[in-house]
Image (tube, rainbow, N blue to C red):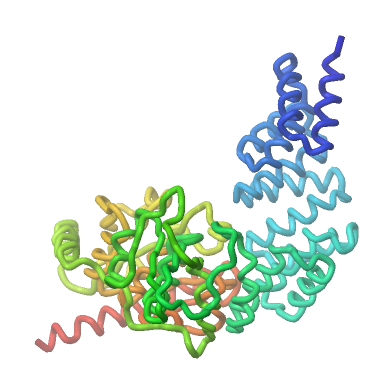
Length: 484
């Protein structure tokens, strides 16, 4: 008759052989009999993490640590799960504890390097990754992380060498290709960047359209990744139509009404379970490569999307109803945080407390455009314009009623740029690739002005600068009114 130890041994054997479902089942058998078995809790947590259930993994491993708090491996695996959940502060603490117990845990060293990168502490990130490299020379996870940290620290030659060495060993390492794509794109080497950007995952297996003659064939353009990406690259759909394609644009339902403003030659469809009938396909973010886009040839009209006139009027009345305080001055919408699930949200979002320099600027009519979890932090004095928004067409109508948008890197900025609404973008030191480096304008959106951190984490100097510029903006806006 099998003992509990036999069942645990069988679970471990399944786990080591990669049979996660069988391992998890046996771990649960052990825990049904002995709920406080620390090894079963820990290893079931590891199995959950391996199948992507990082929240469940963290809870199970934390339970095991309450029973056996001086074991290094569970602390390391808890740190890995918390890192995947985006909880950098708790991950940092767990991994630091693991390495205090066992300084030779190479995975923990690599994960701690990644966590310090998420915290924008590039020197510490590199120090931990270099320790991991000494323990495990040439390990792909460590090499990838080092390449990315070096890139975001703007040590591009070293990053290129690191990623190049990894790709020499593993030519099909997709994440290394994508890391190198971002490095090239952010430096403005767009054509080389687009080529490597093709390593991202695809919805359809066939190669996408690469610019060959269309001759009236139906081409399915697929939205991918985030809402902002769809807005940015939808500009190419009319170009595909002019190149001879019968364009079908497959989008998220929240962007259906907005993207119909691209024009009658674009058939906009809500994404369904199966793709619409087509002869060719192309993800939206592969279109710059198909058109050979470089910095000099980015298609950047002053506006390529528009709000519906009746919706602009309706939202104008709504804004007038919620206005408080001064009755004059420019209307300005604020967004201070992005999607908390975004891999770089910690660095691109701003705590609402830091907005005080903007909120205290005289002569402005400020409004909140903030959505998501951060909406709950809205200052009471800041009127909320998001109640009743149904989709991006409503958001477009709201922006059309504003004089300026001030926002972190979110879909709102892309929407403002696509509509031609003036917008000021607040950027971290290591920006998303599309905003390039060290310039205050965007070749993608003529109506944008960029304000950048001079050093990692320094939002305060950015916000002081923006507050000064807002005061000038208010004065300039009011001057014509006084003259009249």
